[in-house]
Image 1 (cartoon, rainbow, N blue to C red):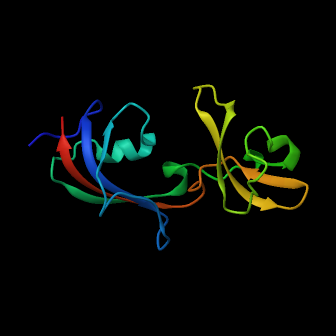
Image 2: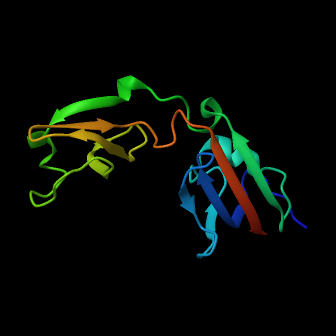
Length: 149
């Protein structure tokens, strides 16, 4: 059976969650994911977990926060006026705590849009957390490798 290599094309089921928490991503019971390692479709630490697994393998990995998605960085939390978000959010949308935003006008060096979670909101201001939602948390990564090319 083929093993996962750094440039493998994979079909797999996977689940990401904080221990004892709800899944952040879960393909089990749905269509499997197809991805290419090295194409930044998974975090580097998650890709490292997959290397060497055989087709058909099932595994569970428990990653500490600093390895999984890094520690939560308070400097990546910003309070902004609601009015400043009008170019990203239609007027009829009322931002609330827990909402996730893709801010296409604020791109990273790689060109990806900035993602943020609303952590506080009032009439005038919105607090946006640009950390990964699992930053600062240990992560459980369950996988079932269905196919390796």
